[in-house]
Image 1 (cartoon, helix red, strand yellow):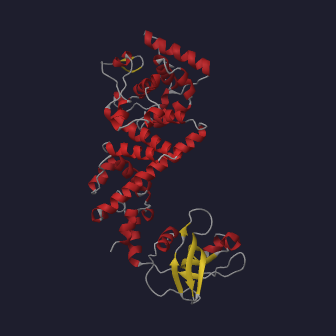
Image 2 (tube, rainbow, N blue to C red):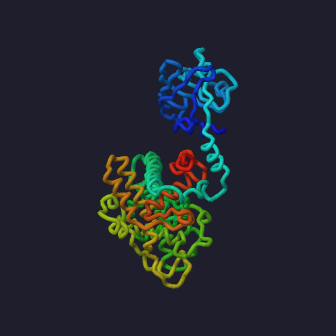
Image 3 (cartoon, rainbow, N blue to C red):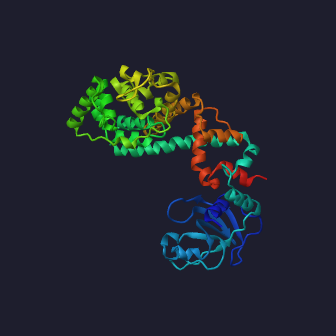
Length: 423
């Protein structure tokens, strides 16, 4: 029996109903299970129990076997001296603290129905463990959990942004530039785009913000796309000249172009075009963190992303390789994905870390006004009766599948809890 499951049973009082007694025969009454501790130390803090006629307040430790107390070294650890009850599945050893006090042991009776359902979920090989139960659950309950997952997703991104802030010495604009650059990888080239951004300091781009060709040259050059090109036309020659000048001035070193993926990508999603679009978005501060957080509505926000590269790119998807003429502006679907994955999260994080609930609500409102993402995860949820109505819900459902269902974290999921405790 997994200790995690025993913790769950204790926390939610799902043990079988009967008269409870300790292994020494004393009557036991559980008044409050305490607060679940996920760090070092006893498993539950500030529990309240009654043994015999005495009311106890203190900590509770849970193990599969009572001998695990010794195996884990708790008998030598004074931080376990305040344990008032040792809850176990099997009793094979007495429990004594580092101070020499004997701790009462209770063999927790497991509710057979809950245990059976848990084993079924653990053994299930479906897309998600509870797939067959989803259509039986209350829409109210599932929607509440989806909303919670959306908030958790945003908080998770806020934590990552906080770490990036530490790395950039609290430079919000540089953090925004790195996150925006990563997003221009559109999944398959995310890592390469972020690497390029981290190797190309924001201050350098800022000093050249009014020179569009130079911005294009810096990003394409740093990505390694100008290294092996022959100067066959004036534009390529100019890009190379601009990049050599900036690279020498600031000591820049380019990536290897082999780190970028083109295979099975539509030409409009080639990383070369995405980097040129990014350069034109940064040109003259077309978009910035301050302009985002000041946006009044979603239409104003996505309109900031409506940029077109210079004329050369009408007939090129890659530098030096001509192609039929076609506009290379950022499409509406791409603009929405950028909003979902970068603009809304950084606005939420800015509000959260600066104590502005207004900005947090604004970020969520943007997501609720955008259509849901289309991917295999969302399709599978729909097949099983749960449909995302907007981007906030699609983000939540992707987060739920990746962070809970995929790892069978049913004991930490509200939907899993409903399945386990349903009649």
